[in-house]
Length: 239
Image 1 (cartoon, rainbow, N blue to C red):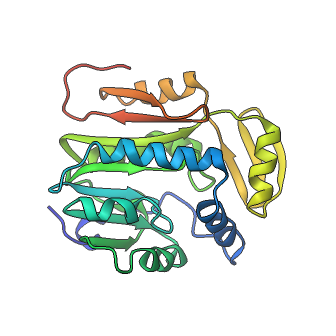
Image 2 (image 1 turned 135 degrees about the vertical axis):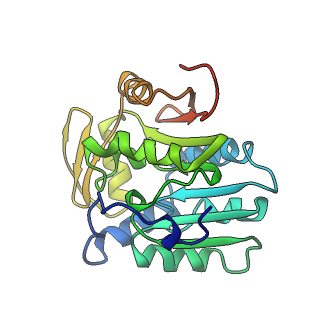
């Protein structure tokens, strides 16, 4: 089993380079540090769900960890947690967030798509609608989930969050609170001043999950967010 980013490196990058300038970084920080009540509810319920999957001997990989919002809470509960993040500014914020927090944690500044799967982790998760992020091409959403599953040990847990279609008026409030501008909604695609983001219907979530051929379940956390929980090594499939 690899113990460093270099041990896991394999394929070329599949996602964009970090955005230039501080604009998106600052606004993402605002979304995380000062969440609206609906987002705070999602954050809390997701953390509760993930925590139930862990023991003090668990190893965890957080894909797109950002400023360590989840890592900060999980690090004291597990044996090892690795945050994957391409933006060095996010990693610096993550390190600050974890100052004084007990736990064996690491940050890898690397493209997740470039990692060689090692089935090394008890839990691999992607929070905050990573499959619908501006950085993830639509054709790479399945690959993202496949890579997550391949980095999960048999019998472990792979979990990804999906943001479902949301009231446009609330989205205006959400982006405005972060200092961003919502410019256009095309179906389930939201174009903003800081990127283009995708929401997913129940059918789209199920179709993507079914395409992987791995047993899974779906947990509705809130009216806006679902978690898809894959069970590598389990025998039965479906919701």
